[in-house]
Structures are given as structure tokens and as C-alpha cells.
Length: 421
Image (cartoon, rainbow, N blue to C red):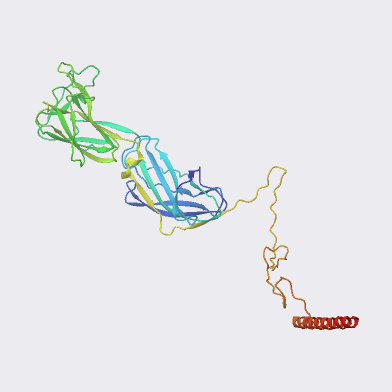
């Protein structure tokens, strides 16, 4: 899970639930199926911004060493809790632990269980998290070891994390008392002063080993030839030329030129278990006269990922409780400074709906279009009074009266003029 960190020890809090379950373990570290008591500690409350931790405590160990182990073997464990409801989807909160052997252990000796360090998920907001304990997965990785097995070991020697042995066909001949053979300066002599050799083309030997890697030890000399090598289910062989040095330089014919205990072929990083190597003398040119096998160096590398064969799972029972963890906001903490920030308490607010009619002075356009009665459209309200028709007829009367008065006046002027004449 992104954001997960490891803290020392499970979270200790008053409001923590501790529940003990019987897990069932099955795998290479137990015989059949064995129970393991597991106590899971889950807090009821976590403050936002702090880590959610799930604690794990293990009971008595049901585990046994699957092989003889050297000092430094490491037993590791990963415990998981499914967490959900805090975001979309689910995640795993993982906690881990390991213990290292301080003494060599025989096959079947009791293994001490490790202490689990609680993982932590950093919360970021208030809410609710569901946590459900899930399975425990144990694995064993030995200390880095290697062992030499002579060409005389022709059956599984048993015991020990690394083992190796040879199966030779009828074309092979044993040669001992090699102490007086002359080797090049600085070269090692044959391991335990003996070898197995073949001169027949296509002569085959099978090597079996239990481990994670191997060196096939042989001699290098100018009278030796090529060797075909197949590992496990491979169908395309690797070819090695024993007439040359490891860097590909040909070995001269002038003695002493022989090199002993040379790694003709090596491999590492294999999944731990039994592996098979098929070795054949290449026929014809450039096949040399001899093919020699001297010893095997078998490795057990200290890499947990190579030891899936030792993986042992302890499954959670079906009745595990899903815990609900409340993530709460942090409480206010007074500042050490003299300045205090106070957040005002919200007051109830009464909302009143008011309808407002804008005044004429603030309006951009008329709110009401008014047509006055009896007159032109002026935008002003008509004044109440006599009908307009009254004024029209009054005007007619006045006009007619004026015309009549004019006629009378003209007649008077004319009459007065006749008198004067």
C-alpha cells in the first residue's frame, strides 16, 4: 500500500481490541497441518494524521527445520490485514518480522518464531476504516553456503541444505593417485587427487544437485574437447571448450599447461530444489581426446525469493472479526504563544424575502409604460376632471361667438361711415 511505513511495535492504546485466533499452518516448515495461536491488536480510534497500526503476537512455534541449517539462516514472516471503507476499493496493511539462527540446526530441529513489527497506514482525514486480519506467510532463507562434492559421490548423500552427486555411464573410467600430475604454475590440483574421464564421443554423465547454483569442476588442457551441457528441461545445449582457458585463450601444447579445479560451467539464482545437469562429450572435430569431471561446488544463496519451496502459510480462521476503526479529527491544542486565535461560533440567521421596486431615478428603462387618458402620450398620468369633449365644444362656441361679434362690428362701422357721407 502506498504511504505505508514500518514503526517499532504494535500501537499501544487504551481503546484497543485484542483478539486471539487459531490459525492453521501448512507447508514445508510443518508436518501436515499445525495450529498457531495469533493475537491481533486493532485500535478502536485513530486521530487523523497519525498511523493506523495493527499489532500481531505469535504463540508457540510449530515449525521445524526442513534441512540441516548453518548459523545465520533467517526465518521471515509477513502478516496482512485487509483494510477497506476508507476509500474506493481495498488494500493490505502488511507487517513483517524475521529471526536469525545463532547456532547450527539439524534437520527437524525447532525453529524460533520472529517478532512481528507492526506496519502503519498514515491516515489523512476523518472517517471509518474496516480492518480484517488475513493470512500469515513464513519463509526460510539459509545463510550463504557452498559445498564441494567429489566425483566419487554417486548417490544422494542426504542431509544438508546443499547436496550433489554423479551418475556415470559405462564409458567412464576412474583415475586416482593424481597427486603427481604436473599442473601449470598457480593452478589447483584435482580435488582429492582423482577424476572420472571418458574418451568415447557422446559419452554422457548426469549430475544431480539440491541448491540454487552449481559449478562443474574439470581440468583444462589442450588435449581436451568440447562439452555439451543441458540444465533441467532445456533443449538447446550450452557448449564449453575445455581446451581453452576461461577467457577463451587456447592452451599451448608445451607442458606444464594443465589447469585443475576449473569451473567449466556455472549457474546461480535457481529456485531452491533438486536440479539435473546432463553432460556429453561432443563428437568429432573439434572434440578432443578427453572429457574429465572432477567435482561439484553446490551453492545455497541467501535470497528469500529463491526459497518458495520452504514457504509456509498460516490461514486465518473464517470467524475473524472485522474491526471498525474511527478516524477522528485532532482535538484543538492551545498554542504556547500569547496570541490566541478564536473561531467565532456561528449564529442562527433568519432569512427574509423582500420584494423591492426600483425608483425611477435608478431605472435604466421604464418599469411601467403609462398612456394618459384624453391626451398625448407623455409618460405622465392624466389628471382627473371634465371630459375633453366639453372643452372642444366650448372652443367651438367661442369661435362662433367671435365670428358673430366680428360681423356685428363690421356692420356698425359701415353704418357709421354712411352717416358721415
